[in-house]
Image 1 (cartoon, rainbow, N blue to C red):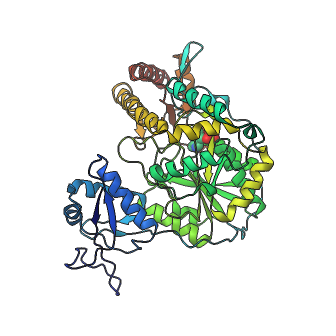
Image 2 (cartoon, rainbow, N blue to C red):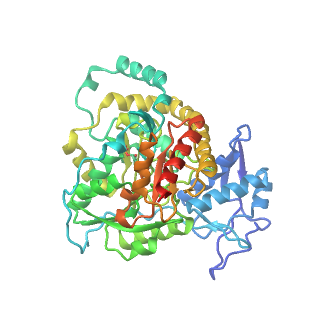
Length: 512
Ligand SMILES: Cc1ncc(COP(=O)(O)O)c(C=O)c1O
């Protein structure tokens, strides 16, 4: 391990940036550990800088050395530093504009405060229990033979055939063999310490989440976590929660079922429109900044900064649904908002995309001021999540099997996505895949005059079951025509055949 020093300059008293070049004799004030024996030099540098910003060693406004200088200082290729800066800028930690110095944008979070997340809620409660059960279509196997056809619905689930059965069985067997009789009592409502500890380490490493095992709450998928959060918010006087428009329609129904009103805020290419959010009287916002569902937009660095400002100013809560961030194919995934402002963000994720939704294992990282209420709600809800699946997952994470599984699946899903995008370019160029290269679903924009419902029906006649995107909009009638295609289980060799069938259906619809 080699420790290299990183000289930095802070802002001048007049607020202007210093030149950004470390002055001779400037005391080294930050040590970044770079292990040159490893291949992940960029990841190490990113982590070192992110940690330094999070723990305050690099305060807001600090000017970082130009990439060339830092590269020389650390004996790294300049491209490594440029990529690390660019990643941290995308995550909202750094601010860089062409021609000016790179500086720290967001620092460690505010000191913890214990105010009610949104006690001054003016609006009234409405729309209680308007929910119905989720459509079966949303929860079927992602790609399966369906009667005479192929089903590409489900909004993007992992390939069930890729579930690591052997490794899971091995860990499950070890758990059942090793556990003392005491483990066969009711579970701890917060979740087993083993899983919380494993996840705290994993999330810190992989998603830049800032947590200890004590802040983690294990739940039955993100769905239960969100439901519990809504219940607690409601008990604290919150009446409305902002959601992305469009968003996963099931979450909207779930929010209503919890007695809260979903308030819809537009999503564009830069993610949630924070200016529109700021005009709404809401106590919390639910969003997926790393990969908005279903459009595939990523919250831009500027919007991330605006959103955190909004949460701090409005004393509101951000609920970060990090459902598929492990699968980013064109670059390193964007780090979490939670890492930038742990006191204002509830972070949530689950095994549903990385392994399988069948496990029903999810987790929340909760700010201290909400933890007690959420634990009470969880205990009341179901007396805790099943123990042995949790312990198995803990071993799966700690043994490195989860990391191996993700490294194995990323290129597989990437190839399936590329094949699908290529198939659209070849067979149905009128339809445009949108969103970043990530996740397990593809959002397909259709021409404005295409009748989405008619196309879905025509596709079924050609043996292809696809999902229209309209139901994910607040007002499905006003939604632009689009499809959501889950490709987790769609092998490259099948992509062209599926899109050719869709193109035939499209041609049927166009016929007078
Ligand atoms: C947007 C979004 N968030 C979260 C999830 C995961 O939910 P759960 O953990 O309850 O299975 C999904 C699953 O499809 C999803 O589409």
